[in-house]
View 1 (cartoon, helix red, strand yellow):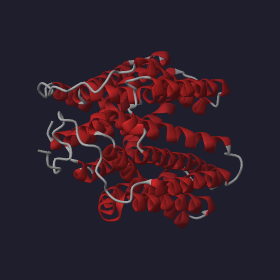
View 2 (cartoon, one colour):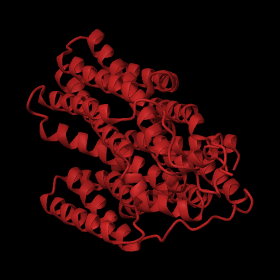
View 3 (spheres, helix red, strand yellow):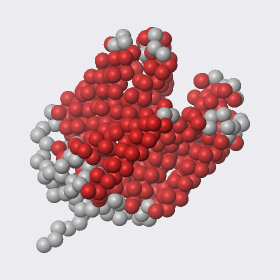
View 4 (spheres, one colour):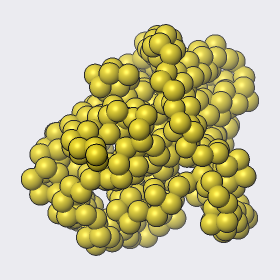
Length: 446
Protein backbone atom coordinates (compact mmCIF):
# COMPACT_ATOMS: atom_id res chain seq x y z
CA UNK A 1 0.00 0.00 0.00
CA UNK A 2 1.38 3.40 -0.99
CA UNK A 3 1.95 6.01 1.74
CA UNK A 4 -0.74 8.27 0.28
CA UNK A 5 -3.34 5.50 0.14
CA UNK A 6 -2.39 4.39 3.66
CA UNK A 7 -2.91 7.94 4.95
CA UNK A 8 -6.29 8.32 3.20
CA UNK A 9 -7.45 4.94 4.49
CA UNK A 10 -6.24 5.66 8.02
CA UNK A 11 -7.89 9.09 8.21
CA UNK A 12 -11.17 7.90 6.72
CA UNK A 13 -11.41 4.93 9.08
CA UNK A 14 -10.65 7.06 12.13
CA UNK A 15 -13.14 9.74 11.06
CA UNK A 16 -15.95 7.22 10.51
CA UNK A 17 -15.50 5.81 14.00
CA UNK A 18 -15.30 9.30 15.56
CA UNK A 19 -18.42 10.48 13.72
CA UNK A 20 -20.34 7.37 14.73
CA UNK A 21 -19.81 8.05 18.43
CA UNK A 22 -20.69 11.74 18.33
CA UNK A 23 -23.80 11.52 16.13
CA UNK A 24 -25.20 8.62 18.16
CA UNK A 25 -25.22 10.76 21.31
CA UNK A 26 -27.46 13.27 19.54
CA UNK A 27 -29.73 10.55 18.14
CA UNK A 28 -30.30 8.55 21.35
CA UNK A 29 -33.28 10.52 22.74
CA UNK A 30 -35.16 10.23 19.44
CA UNK A 31 -34.22 6.55 19.15
CA UNK A 32 -35.63 5.95 22.64
CA UNK A 33 -38.97 7.56 21.79
CA UNK A 34 -39.28 5.89 18.39
CA UNK A 35 -38.54 2.35 19.63
CA UNK A 36 -40.27 2.71 23.00
CA UNK A 37 -37.02 1.79 24.77
CA UNK A 38 -36.05 2.37 28.37
CA UNK A 39 -33.18 4.66 29.32
CA UNK A 40 -31.08 1.63 30.33
CA UNK A 41 -31.64 0.00 26.93
CA UNK A 42 -30.58 3.15 25.12
CA UNK A 43 -27.44 3.35 27.25
CA UNK A 44 -26.57 -0.19 26.20
CA UNK A 45 -26.42 0.91 22.57
CA UNK A 46 -23.25 2.72 23.64
CA UNK A 47 -22.06 0.41 26.42
CA UNK A 48 -22.31 -2.75 24.29
CA UNK A 49 -20.25 -1.12 21.56
CA UNK A 50 -17.60 0.08 24.02
CA UNK A 51 -17.24 -3.34 25.64
CA UNK A 52 -16.83 -5.11 22.29
CA UNK A 53 -14.27 -2.59 21.04
CA UNK A 54 -12.17 -2.52 24.20
CA UNK A 55 -12.13 -6.30 24.49
CA UNK A 56 -10.82 -6.98 20.97
CA UNK A 57 -8.57 -4.08 19.97
CA UNK A 58 -5.23 -5.68 20.89
CA UNK A 59 -6.11 -9.08 19.40
CA UNK A 60 -7.25 -7.36 16.21
CA UNK A 61 -3.91 -5.56 16.06
CA UNK A 62 -2.15 -8.91 16.43
CA UNK A 63 -4.15 -10.27 13.50
CA UNK A 64 -2.92 -7.34 11.42
CA UNK A 65 0.69 -7.97 12.38
CA UNK A 66 0.39 -11.62 11.39
CA UNK A 67 -1.69 -11.41 8.21
CA UNK A 68 -1.27 -7.80 7.06
CA UNK A 69 -3.24 -4.72 8.08
CA UNK A 70 -5.21 -4.37 4.85
CA UNK A 71 -7.35 -7.45 5.46
CA UNK A 72 -8.59 -6.51 8.96
CA UNK A 73 -9.12 -2.95 7.70
CA UNK A 74 -11.25 -4.17 4.77
CA UNK A 75 -13.26 -6.60 6.90
CA UNK A 76 -13.73 -3.97 9.60
CA UNK A 77 -14.93 -1.37 7.11
CA UNK A 78 -17.36 -3.73 5.36
CA UNK A 79 -18.73 -5.03 8.65
CA UNK A 80 -19.02 -1.54 10.11
CA UNK A 81 -21.00 -0.39 7.09
CA UNK A 82 -23.22 -3.49 7.01
CA UNK A 83 -24.09 -3.28 10.71
CA UNK A 84 -24.81 0.44 10.35
CA UNK A 85 -27.30 -0.38 7.59
CA UNK A 86 -28.84 -3.11 9.74
CA UNK A 87 -29.33 -0.74 12.66
CA UNK A 88 -30.91 1.82 10.35
CA UNK A 89 -33.69 -0.56 9.31
CA UNK A 90 -34.21 -2.35 12.65
CA UNK A 91 -37.38 -1.76 14.66
CA UNK A 92 -36.52 -3.65 17.85
CA UNK A 93 -34.20 -2.14 20.46
CA UNK A 94 -32.85 -5.56 21.40
CA UNK A 95 -31.61 -6.12 17.85
CA UNK A 96 -30.22 -2.59 17.78
CA UNK A 97 -28.12 -3.37 20.87
CA UNK A 98 -26.96 -6.67 19.35
CA UNK A 99 -25.99 -4.98 16.10
CA UNK A 100 -24.13 -2.29 18.04
CA UNK A 101 -22.11 -5.03 19.74
CA UNK A 102 -21.35 -6.54 16.32
CA UNK A 103 -20.42 -3.08 15.09
CA UNK A 104 -17.99 -2.84 18.00
CA UNK A 105 -16.33 -6.08 16.86
CA UNK A 106 -15.82 -4.68 13.37
CA UNK A 107 -14.70 -1.35 14.81
CA UNK A 108 -12.06 -3.22 16.81
CA UNK A 109 -10.77 -4.81 13.60
CA UNK A 110 -10.68 -1.45 11.87
CA UNK A 111 -9.06 0.85 14.42
CA UNK A 112 -5.63 -0.76 15.04
CA UNK A 113 -5.22 -1.19 11.29
CA UNK A 114 -5.53 2.58 10.77
CA UNK A 115 -2.33 3.04 12.80
CA UNK A 116 -0.62 -0.16 11.67
CA UNK A 117 -0.92 0.90 8.02
CA UNK A 118 0.73 4.23 8.78
CA UNK A 119 3.61 2.57 10.65
CA UNK A 120 4.18 0.13 7.78
CA UNK A 121 3.93 2.79 5.05
CA UNK A 122 5.99 5.65 6.54
CA UNK A 123 9.57 5.66 7.84
CA UNK A 124 9.84 6.55 11.55
CA UNK A 125 11.15 10.06 10.86
CA UNK A 126 8.11 10.84 8.69
CA UNK A 127 5.36 9.67 11.04
CA UNK A 128 4.76 13.03 12.72
CA UNK A 129 2.87 14.64 9.85
CA UNK A 130 0.54 11.68 9.03
CA UNK A 131 -0.36 11.35 12.70
CA UNK A 132 -1.02 15.09 12.90
CA UNK A 133 -3.31 14.92 9.85
CA UNK A 134 -5.15 11.97 11.39
CA UNK A 135 -5.63 13.76 14.71
CA UNK A 136 -6.81 16.97 13.03
CA UNK A 137 -9.36 14.97 11.03
CA UNK A 138 -10.63 13.31 14.22
CA UNK A 139 -10.96 16.77 15.79
CA UNK A 140 -12.97 18.01 12.83
CA UNK A 141 -15.20 14.94 13.04
CA UNK A 142 -15.75 15.51 16.75
CA UNK A 143 -16.70 19.12 16.06
CA UNK A 144 -18.91 18.38 13.05
CA UNK A 145 -20.53 15.24 14.49
CA UNK A 146 -23.06 16.89 16.84
CA UNK A 147 -24.02 19.45 14.20
CA UNK A 148 -24.38 16.86 11.43
CA UNK A 149 -26.17 14.48 13.76
CA UNK A 150 -28.61 17.14 14.91
CA UNK A 151 -29.38 18.18 11.34
CA UNK A 152 -29.92 14.59 10.18
CA UNK A 153 -32.12 13.67 13.14
CA UNK A 154 -34.17 16.84 12.71
CA UNK A 155 -34.68 16.31 8.96
CA UNK A 156 -34.86 12.52 8.57
CA UNK A 157 -34.97 10.88 12.02
CA UNK A 158 -32.44 8.89 14.04
CA UNK A 159 -31.97 6.18 11.41
CA UNK A 160 -30.24 8.66 9.12
CA UNK A 161 -27.20 8.93 11.40
CA UNK A 162 -26.47 5.24 10.85
CA UNK A 163 -27.00 5.38 7.09
CA UNK A 164 -24.37 8.15 7.05
CA UNK A 165 -21.63 5.51 7.53
CA UNK A 166 -22.82 2.95 5.03
CA UNK A 167 -21.63 4.35 1.70
CA UNK A 168 -18.07 5.39 2.67
CA UNK A 169 -17.49 2.21 4.71
CA UNK A 170 -18.62 -0.17 1.98
CA UNK A 171 -16.74 1.66 -0.78
CA UNK A 172 -13.45 1.88 1.13
CA UNK A 173 -13.78 -1.70 2.36
CA UNK A 174 -14.30 -2.95 -1.19
CA UNK A 175 -11.36 -0.89 -2.47
CA UNK A 176 -9.14 -2.33 0.26
CA UNK A 177 -10.12 -5.87 -0.75
CA UNK A 178 -9.34 -5.09 -4.39
CA UNK A 179 -5.96 -3.62 -3.54
CA UNK A 180 -4.10 -6.58 -4.96
CA UNK A 181 -2.44 -9.56 -3.32
CA UNK A 182 -0.78 -8.55 -0.06
CA UNK A 183 2.97 -9.12 0.18
CA UNK A 184 4.10 -12.37 1.76
CA UNK A 185 4.78 -11.86 5.44
CA UNK A 186 7.03 -13.86 7.71
CA UNK A 187 5.06 -15.08 10.70
CA UNK A 188 5.63 -12.95 13.76
CA UNK A 189 4.50 -15.55 16.26
CA UNK A 190 1.27 -17.24 17.24
CA UNK A 191 -1.99 -15.52 18.01
CA UNK A 192 -1.95 -16.56 21.70
CA UNK A 193 -5.67 -17.30 21.95
CA UNK A 194 -5.60 -17.92 25.74
CA UNK A 195 -3.94 -14.54 26.26
CA UNK A 196 -6.43 -12.90 23.91
CA UNK A 197 -9.36 -14.37 25.84
CA UNK A 198 -7.93 -13.29 29.21
CA UNK A 199 -7.27 -9.75 27.97
CA UNK A 200 -10.72 -9.54 26.38
CA UNK A 201 -12.31 -10.65 29.67
CA UNK A 202 -10.22 -8.12 31.61
CA UNK A 203 -11.10 -5.15 29.42
CA UNK A 204 -14.75 -6.09 28.90
CA UNK A 205 -15.32 -6.43 32.65
CA UNK A 206 -13.35 -3.26 33.36
CA UNK A 207 -15.41 -1.18 30.93
CA UNK A 208 -18.63 -2.73 32.24
CA UNK A 209 -17.64 -2.00 35.85
CA UNK A 210 -16.76 1.61 35.04
CA UNK A 211 -19.90 2.28 33.01
CA UNK A 212 -22.37 0.55 35.33
CA UNK A 213 -20.39 1.02 38.58
CA UNK A 214 -20.81 -2.68 39.35
CA UNK A 215 -18.27 -4.03 41.86
CA UNK A 216 -18.43 -7.77 40.99
CA UNK A 217 -17.37 -7.22 37.39
CA UNK A 218 -14.55 -5.03 38.67
CA UNK A 219 -13.32 -7.94 40.79
CA UNK A 220 -13.52 -10.27 37.78
CA UNK A 221 -11.50 -7.73 35.76
CA UNK A 222 -8.79 -7.63 38.44
CA UNK A 223 -8.54 -11.43 38.66
CA UNK A 224 -8.47 -11.78 34.87
CA UNK A 225 -5.77 -9.10 34.65
CA UNK A 226 -3.54 -11.00 37.09
CA UNK A 227 -4.12 -14.24 35.16
CA UNK A 228 -3.28 -12.45 31.88
CA UNK A 229 0.01 -11.06 33.21
CA UNK A 230 1.01 -14.49 34.58
CA UNK A 231 0.14 -16.15 31.27
CA UNK A 232 2.06 -13.59 29.21
CA UNK A 233 5.18 -14.11 31.32
CA UNK A 234 5.08 -17.88 30.85
CA UNK A 235 4.09 -18.27 27.20
CA UNK A 236 6.72 -18.40 24.45
CA UNK A 237 4.64 -16.34 22.03
CA UNK A 238 2.75 -13.69 24.03
CA UNK A 239 -0.14 -11.66 22.65
CA UNK A 240 1.68 -8.44 23.60
CA UNK A 241 5.39 -8.83 22.76
CA UNK A 242 7.88 -7.63 25.35
CA UNK A 243 9.33 -5.28 22.74
CA UNK A 244 6.06 -3.32 22.88
CA UNK A 245 4.77 -3.29 26.44
CA UNK A 246 8.28 -3.79 27.86
CA UNK A 247 9.43 -0.56 26.24
CA UNK A 248 9.42 2.21 28.90
CA UNK A 249 8.58 4.96 26.34
CA UNK A 250 5.61 2.96 24.98
CA UNK A 251 4.26 2.10 28.44
CA UNK A 252 4.64 5.71 29.59
CA UNK A 253 2.96 7.11 26.49
CA UNK A 254 0.02 4.72 26.93
CA UNK A 255 -0.40 5.87 30.52
CA UNK A 256 -0.26 9.52 29.48
CA UNK A 257 -2.84 8.97 26.72
CA UNK A 258 -5.14 7.24 29.22
CA UNK A 259 -4.80 10.09 31.70
CA UNK A 260 -5.33 12.76 29.02
CA UNK A 261 -8.43 11.13 27.53
CA UNK A 262 -9.86 10.53 31.02
CA UNK A 263 -9.32 14.18 31.97
CA UNK A 264 -10.88 15.43 28.73
CA UNK A 265 -13.96 13.20 28.73
CA UNK A 266 -14.61 13.57 32.45
CA UNK A 267 -14.31 17.36 32.18
CA UNK A 268 -16.68 17.51 29.21
CA UNK A 269 -19.21 15.34 31.05
CA UNK A 270 -19.05 17.44 34.22
CA UNK A 271 -18.83 20.68 32.22
CA UNK A 272 -22.05 19.95 30.37
CA UNK A 273 -23.94 19.76 33.66
CA UNK A 274 -22.25 22.89 34.96
CA UNK A 275 -23.21 24.85 31.85
CA UNK A 276 -26.82 23.69 31.64
CA UNK A 277 -27.77 22.83 35.22
CA UNK A 278 -25.76 25.33 37.27
CA UNK A 279 -25.46 28.26 34.84
CA UNK A 280 -28.83 27.72 33.14
CA UNK A 281 -27.53 27.81 29.55
CA UNK A 282 -29.47 26.14 26.78
CA UNK A 283 -27.84 23.34 24.70
CA UNK A 284 -27.01 25.67 21.79
CA UNK A 285 -25.16 28.22 23.94
CA UNK A 286 -23.40 25.40 25.75
CA UNK A 287 -22.24 23.95 22.42
CA UNK A 288 -20.97 27.37 21.27
CA UNK A 289 -18.95 27.81 24.47
CA UNK A 290 -17.38 24.38 23.87
CA UNK A 291 -16.48 25.23 20.26
CA UNK A 292 -12.97 26.57 21.12
CA UNK A 293 -12.07 23.07 22.27
CA UNK A 294 -12.60 21.57 18.82
CA UNK A 295 -10.96 24.52 17.05
CA UNK A 296 -7.82 24.39 19.20
CA UNK A 297 -7.64 20.61 19.00
CA UNK A 298 -7.56 20.78 15.21
CA UNK A 299 -5.02 23.63 15.25
CA UNK A 300 -2.78 21.90 17.79
CA UNK A 301 -2.30 18.74 15.71
CA UNK A 302 -0.09 20.21 12.94
CA UNK A 303 1.70 22.42 15.47
CA UNK A 304 2.59 19.33 17.49
CA UNK A 305 4.39 17.82 14.50
CA UNK A 306 6.67 20.87 14.51
CA UNK A 307 7.14 20.76 18.29
CA UNK A 308 8.08 17.08 18.19
CA UNK A 309 10.76 17.78 15.62
CA UNK A 310 12.20 20.78 17.47
CA UNK A 311 11.59 20.07 21.16
CA UNK A 312 11.24 16.29 21.31
CA UNK A 313 8.53 14.08 22.79
CA UNK A 314 9.29 14.71 26.46
CA UNK A 315 9.09 18.49 26.54
CA UNK A 316 6.17 18.59 24.11
CA UNK A 317 4.08 16.13 26.11
CA UNK A 318 4.92 17.61 29.53
CA UNK A 319 3.94 21.07 28.31
CA UNK A 320 0.74 19.80 26.68
CA UNK A 321 -0.38 17.88 29.77
CA UNK A 322 0.31 20.97 31.88
CA UNK A 323 -1.85 23.07 29.55
CA UNK A 324 -4.57 20.42 29.76
CA UNK A 325 -4.49 20.43 33.58
CA UNK A 326 -4.55 24.23 33.66
CA UNK A 327 -7.56 24.24 31.33
CA UNK A 328 -9.48 21.97 33.70
CA UNK A 329 -8.62 24.25 36.63
CA UNK A 330 -9.80 27.31 34.70
CA UNK A 331 -13.11 25.59 33.99
CA UNK A 332 -13.45 24.63 37.66
CA UNK A 333 -13.20 28.30 38.65
CA UNK A 334 -15.01 29.88 35.67
CA UNK A 335 -18.36 31.60 36.09
CA UNK A 336 -18.55 33.69 32.92
CA UNK A 337 -18.37 33.00 29.17
CA UNK A 338 -14.86 34.45 28.73
CA UNK A 339 -13.19 32.14 31.23
CA UNK A 340 -15.30 29.19 30.10
CA UNK A 341 -14.22 29.71 26.50
CA UNK A 342 -10.59 30.08 27.58
CA UNK A 343 -10.79 26.89 29.63
CA UNK A 344 -12.19 24.88 26.74
CA UNK A 345 -9.56 26.36 24.40
CA UNK A 346 -6.76 25.26 26.75
CA UNK A 347 -8.38 21.84 27.02
CA UNK A 348 -8.43 21.43 23.22
CA UNK A 349 -4.88 22.72 22.72
CA UNK A 350 -3.48 20.43 25.38
CA UNK A 351 -5.36 17.32 24.33
CA UNK A 352 -4.75 17.76 20.61
CA UNK A 353 -1.01 18.02 21.25
CA UNK A 354 -0.90 15.08 23.67
CA UNK A 355 -2.85 12.86 21.28
CA UNK A 356 -0.35 13.39 18.46
CA UNK A 357 2.74 13.24 20.69
CA UNK A 358 1.65 10.17 22.67
CA UNK A 359 0.51 8.26 19.60
CA UNK A 360 3.76 9.18 17.85
CA UNK A 361 5.80 7.66 20.68
CA UNK A 362 3.72 4.46 20.77
CA UNK A 363 3.74 3.87 17.02
CA UNK A 364 7.35 4.98 16.46
CA UNK A 365 8.99 3.18 19.37
CA UNK A 366 7.23 -0.16 18.82
CA UNK A 367 8.92 -2.58 16.37
CA UNK A 368 7.29 -2.35 12.96
CA UNK A 369 6.35 -6.04 13.02
CA UNK A 370 4.26 -5.26 16.14
CA UNK A 371 2.65 -2.09 14.77
CA UNK A 372 -0.84 -3.58 14.96
CA UNK A 373 -0.48 -4.52 18.63
CA UNK A 374 0.90 -1.04 19.35
CA UNK A 375 -2.06 0.50 17.54
CA UNK A 376 -4.44 -1.74 19.47
CA UNK A 377 -2.89 -0.68 22.78
CA UNK A 378 -3.14 2.99 21.81
CA UNK A 379 -6.79 2.60 20.88
CA UNK A 380 -7.42 0.68 24.11
CA UNK A 381 -5.96 3.55 26.12
CA UNK A 382 -8.20 5.95 24.21
CA UNK A 383 -11.23 3.75 24.99
CA UNK A 384 -10.60 3.01 28.67
CA UNK A 385 -9.52 6.58 29.50
CA UNK A 386 -12.80 8.32 28.60
CA UNK A 387 -14.87 5.68 30.41
CA UNK A 388 -12.69 6.15 33.51
CA UNK A 389 -12.97 9.94 33.37
CA UNK A 390 -16.76 9.87 33.07
CA UNK A 391 -16.92 7.38 35.94
CA UNK A 392 -14.91 9.77 38.16
CA UNK A 393 -17.11 12.72 37.18
CA UNK A 394 -20.30 10.76 37.75
CA UNK A 395 -19.21 9.56 41.19
CA UNK A 396 -18.30 13.08 42.37
CA UNK A 397 -20.98 15.00 40.47
CA UNK A 398 -22.72 16.36 43.57
CA UNK A 399 -19.49 17.39 45.32
CA UNK A 400 -19.15 20.88 43.84
CA UNK A 401 -15.88 21.47 41.96
CA UNK A 402 -14.41 18.16 43.22
CA UNK A 403 -14.76 16.28 39.89
CA UNK A 404 -12.83 18.89 37.96
CA UNK A 405 -10.17 19.21 40.67
CA UNK A 406 -9.63 15.44 40.66
CA UNK A 407 -9.45 15.40 36.85
CA UNK A 408 -6.97 18.30 36.89
CA UNK A 409 -4.86 16.30 39.33
CA UNK A 410 -5.01 13.32 36.97
CA UNK A 411 -3.77 15.49 34.10
CA UNK A 412 -0.98 16.88 36.29
CA UNK A 413 0.04 13.33 37.18
CA UNK A 414 0.23 12.59 33.46
CA UNK A 415 2.52 15.61 33.03
CA UNK A 416 4.86 14.22 35.68
CA UNK A 417 4.79 10.77 34.08
CA UNK A 418 5.65 12.32 30.72
CA UNK A 419 9.07 13.22 32.13
CA UNK A 420 9.95 9.56 31.53
CA UNK A 421 9.44 9.89 27.77
CA UNK A 422 12.48 10.08 25.48
CA UNK A 423 13.87 13.58 25.10
CA UNK A 424 14.62 13.34 21.41
CA UNK A 425 13.72 11.17 18.45
CA UNK A 426 15.54 7.91 19.02
CA UNK A 427 14.93 5.29 16.36
CA UNK A 428 12.92 2.21 17.25
CA UNK A 429 14.00 -1.35 16.68
CA UNK A 430 14.98 -2.17 13.08
CA UNK A 431 12.20 -3.02 10.70
CA UNK A 432 11.20 -6.52 9.76
CA UNK A 433 12.70 -7.52 6.39
CA UNK A 434 9.24 -7.78 4.85
CA UNK A 435 8.52 -4.15 5.80
CA UNK A 436 10.36 -1.94 3.29
CA UNK A 437 8.97 1.18 4.94
CA UNK A 438 11.11 0.76 8.03
CA UNK A 439 14.03 3.05 8.89
CA UNK A 440 15.50 2.88 5.40
CA UNK A 441 18.17 5.47 6.09
CA UNK A 442 20.13 3.00 8.21
CA UNK A 443 22.59 1.32 5.84
CA UNK A 444 22.69 -2.46 5.71
CA UNK A 445 25.66 -4.19 7.24
CA UNK A 446 28.08 -5.80 4.85
